[in-house]
Structures are given as C-alpha cells and as structure tokens.
Amino acid sequence: MSKIRTIGVLTSGGDSPGMNAAIRSVTRSAICNGFKVKGIYRGYEGLIHDEIKTFTTENVSNIIQTGGTILRTARSKEFETPAGRKKAYETLRKEAIDALVVIGGNGSLTGAMLFAEEYDFPCIGLPGTIDNDLYGTDSTIGYDTTLNTITDCVDKIRDTAASHERIFFIEVMGRDAGFLAQNSAIAAGAEAAIIPEDSTGSDQLIQFMERGIRKSKKSCIVIVSESPKCGAMHYAERVRKEYPNFDVRVSILGHLQRGGSPSARDRILASRVGVGAIQAIVQGQRNVMVGVRNNEVVYVPFIDAIGKRKPLDKNLIRVLDELSI
Picture 1: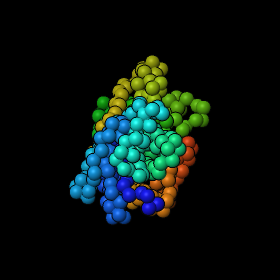
Picture 2: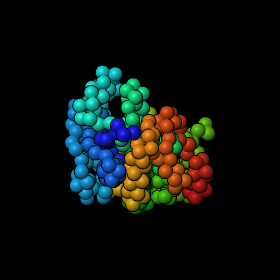
Picture 3: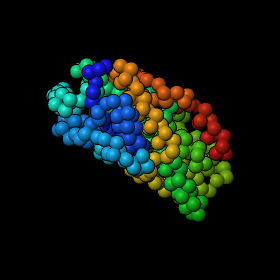
Picture 4: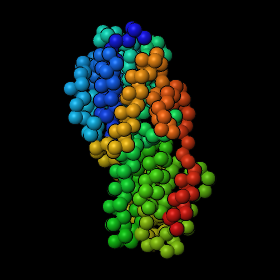
C-alpha cells in the first residue's frame, strides 16, 4: 500500500444532505494519515475532463452543516462507456491519483465497480443517497435528513387537509424503495403509505379506502412512493373516478426533499464512513462500500451493496395499519 500517496474524492448522481460532511471527513482523515487529497468536481464527468483541485483542510472548513455538495455533481453518460472510463483512468494517472473515494448511490457505485474491475484500481464507496436503498448499511447519507424534511412538509399539509376535509396524496422520492414513504407515513401520522414493497397482491387503494376514510375520517394523508406509472396523480385520479364524493388533492414534494442542512445523524454517519474509507485504504481493502450496521462500521463488497435488494421491515406496514384506524 506504499504506492498509494494521493486519494481522489468525488460526489456523483443525485445530491444528498451530508455529502459535504463526507467530503470533509475523507479529506481530513486522509491528510491525518499522511495522504494527499484531490477533489474531483462534477463527479465522473469532471474526472473525464480533469476538473480536479488539490484539497487541504481549509478547503473543507465550515461545510459540515451545509447541504448539497461543494464538489458539485453530475450524471455522466460518457463514463458509462469503455471509452469514457479509459479517459477517466488517463486523468487519474496524469493527476497521480492512486485511489478513489466515490460518494453516491446505486448508479455511482456501479460505475466505481466497473472501473475498479477494468483497471484494477482501488475504489471505495460511501453510501450517499436519500433513497436508503443500498444493501449492507442501516442508513445512507441523506436519508435521515430527507425523512425529517418530508415529515415537516406533511405536518403542514395536514393543516390544510383537515381544514378542507380533503384527501391528500403526497408523493415522495425513493425510486423502487419505500423506506421514505413508509417511515414518513408513520412519523407524520398518515393514514396510509403506498409502497412497492407491499406486494400482497391486493389493491392498496381500495384496501385503504375501505379500512379508513369510508368509516369515520373526513380528511386524511396518503404517502405514495414515486413511480412513473402509479404515482400520486394516478391514485388521485382513481379516487376522483371511483369515489367522486371525496375532495382530492395531490402534492408532489419533488426536489425540496434533497435540500437543507443535514441532520446530526447524517453528519455523524458521513463522518464515520469517511474515516472508514481511509482506514479501508490503509488496510489494503478495495472495491467495497463503507456502511454502518448495528452501530458498527462495515465493509460491503460493491457487488453486494448494489446487487442485493435491501429489505424493508414488513412490521412497519403493520405498525402503520394499526395506528391509522
């Protein structure tokens, strides 16, 4: 491992609160352990086009409390090609970067895995995604902050729902994972959550309408995981057609879920996995994601982190069902 002298760090894909805390942690831990650090701007796109700057501790001062990412981020179609990855490798050689820390979600870590395999290059991943869908870590950087943001928004929407006796379908992010929808529904006291993991085969909308709103409630909140086919708009239209006596509204929270100052929990998680990334490099590990499971730092092979489906605790569905009567 004496060959590793300089570590590059980048953020890729969608931004998440706590990425700056992770950049800070990686930079300062690396310097503390005798490495040089170079910040790579605009993710893999910036790596291809050599948008790189040497970092010192001063570069990461006063950022732990800020949202977004000081390194900025982008989705790179070029890096998805062998030619693009070759350009990235040539940039790393030119900049004398010997190992790479990638902060991002499923797509970002998939890119790191492919690159590591093609060029036998040490890559360490940090789980930076609000979706909480990476296997092997209890939480991902940004998930807790986003959950709190959603809960705060739902609390405000409920005031209007109750005042006008309306059903509100609130769409939240999460892609194919229902962690944000299910847990924000519990935290905000919503009447239902419609999530991809609830695969009982029954119609979730009819189940909800028969159980709750048609009995005694004149207003209610339903949290819906985003979906191009069955998002909040889809279910609202169904209610308008199938239950025309109800006043229905839709709120799609969108990108406001990504912003804001990271929570203490996300700052601590980002700090721990950032230090863990440098320790992995010191120990000679490569091609792993650093996570925290049962309050212990763990190292998860890329193939598991991105290839295995993270299970949602089905007991959460029962908790919401019982508390929403």
